[in-house]
Length: 300
Image 1: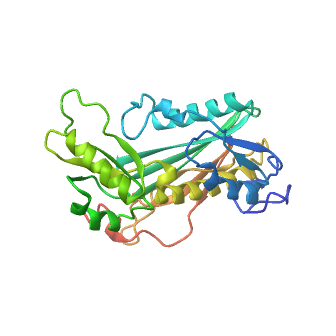
Image 2: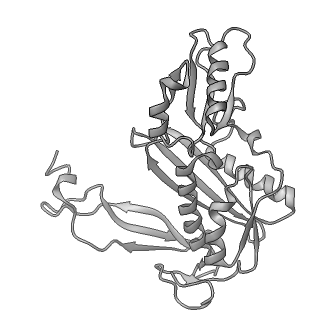
């Protein structure tokens, strides 16, 4: 993609032109878990914009992974709410926020991680949403009465860089507490498992990965990737209305089978569109025809 500094030149994006409207801007990230650190380098390098986070911002009010605060909004609406909260707390008009979901990925049936990153520009009335899916999760839920029972598996899962959460496996009636988050040292982990086990009917504690960004290296990698994606879109303007945010927004299937010529579900073209107007552009994907193994006729 053309750099933000070369305004007016054709960007290496189908139908788009380069834009530097965010040079010198400050964007606030709606987070209390340090996510701004993953996005800030791309925004500075690509856009010349600074990303900061409010000193105090209660984003847990929209729900937590552990369920102590239930999630009432969809992931996208939750991210939007965090962005709005950040703007309200700082008086800014540019904001970012993200939301993650872990579990069975829709349409795939495999366990994984889906992250969305939302950018809101209230002044221009635009919103950009980028998402990324990753198969696998940063460890699995374990049940144990002592650290020694799970030490090897925790190490394989990346602990202590990947922090864990501990709570009672089957809380006793009326049990209060027993939940410890962000555990990255052995003494705290051993004490948390012992305490949670005492509050559990079966004498066991649940040990699970802490999915919050500041304790989750794999999630931080995804946020870094999404930061680049959003920054590159903001550095590219619509050729019709000049709104920043031009980018790929959909994929069209239908690539012809190389053996029989019938359309398959393989990608045929990409759709590029503007977030500020109705302009769209379709760019065929270069490359050979689809392998017959993806064809319903040749490989029923």
